[in-house]
Image (cartoon, rainbow, N blue to C red; front, side, top):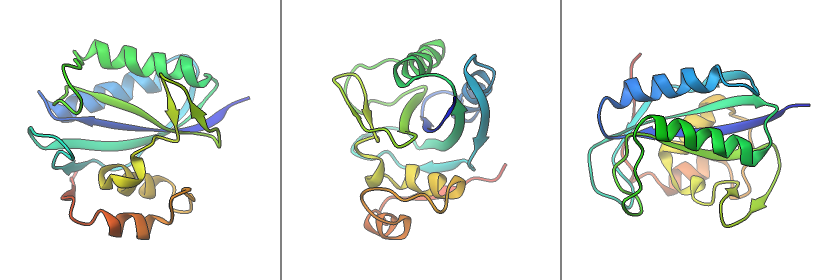
Length: 159
């Protein structure tokens, strides 16, 4: 049995585009990942942080991994790309966030799903909408949530 999950990817240090491409490639070839579909890339200014512009996207995966082993995989990929966590919202070489895992609601010290701030981030909402335009989020419709964060700069990047 497999589950549809959504993962947000972002980077703003080093060659962010290349890092995201490498992370998606690694994820797509990982054990327990059956399929992967990627949204377009976007550039965005940091939210609640300082630093360079981010490159962001979202991927939809069909996975046989349970939530915590999936989180372990995401964190291992981050580590392969030199992810450091010196302080909250620090610039990063790679950030992989488990946004949704089927319809599960998880609240533990290590993992919160649905991601607790995704509905406040245009850089998550827009690519998520690209992948799953009919997805219903608990906090509202894509149009109303995107309108609420319209001050966040977001530009779709060309391939």
